[in-house]
Image (cartoon, rainbow, N blue to C red; front, side, top):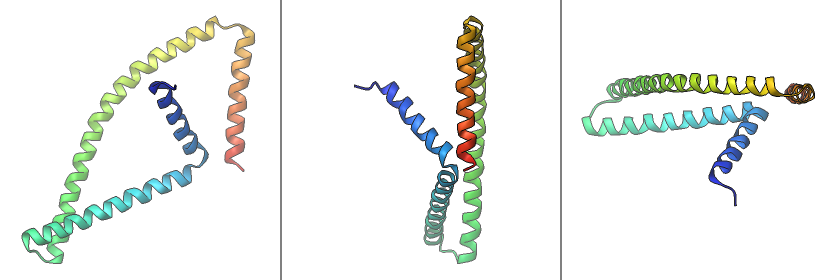
Length: 133
């Protein structure tokens, strides 16, 4: 049985692999999904405001524009707050991982270092080859 932690790592690896191998398709699909959700949200607000307040088309569009602008600004503000927390946590994790990697590198033998560098170069060469096909 696969543990939940290993399953999470496998799923993240699969998703990252798909994003690395076909980024244009993935980001195009995400953009289309986001655009469709935005259009549906806008239409729902149009109908809701038009029926609640008995306004015309122009007034409804103005109200919906400012409602959506307010929601987007609120979402960006929350994202900014969240990113500050993530950045501070990232700095701590980065420092730990960096010191751990440096300690591992210092304690590795010369043969092990050659193996690490050659594997890294092979992976980078494969990615460059794959993206230039």
